[in-house]
Length: 210
Ligand SMILES: [Fe+2]
Image 1 (tube, rainbow, N blue to C red):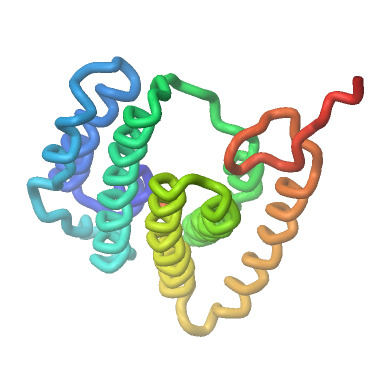
Image 2: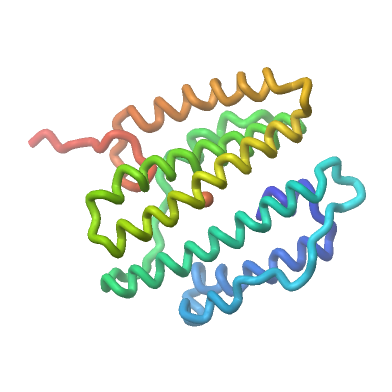
């Protein structure tokens, strides 16, 4: 949502996006509202179009709007599962993973946007892989849920990569490939090096020696 508000949409569209997110943010940051009501609030009330000054078109917006909708859907699906399993909802800090990649994003456009899309693709693809690895070890309810998330993540990472290639342009596909390889190296070191924080996207768990 940050990305399309920054790069693509006009003021009315930006306001409509914020209004869409508002009940979710109120729940997350202020614990306001009931998660059971979030499903009914997961809708964008206006069509969102590109601002005239934006070089990025409707395709970026449409793909991202669909992706946001799915991620918000996952959010209250997770709350439902947590409720079933009696797990309390509480805030946790993000692990080093996403930030570890985003610090290597270029600082000028359109390269910065292309890099952010590539990082998005890695996050989604790695999620997809981790859900696949975990699903067989879980009970049926949770395993089936992880498989349903996996199917979305597989689409999301392809969407991010397609957008990165579209924005770079057909004559720049080598450049996109080299940035994918660049981030693959960073990503590999983040997931294979020791990490004291144990979360979904952490590195190798640090094991206490005594
Ligand atoms: Fe996703």
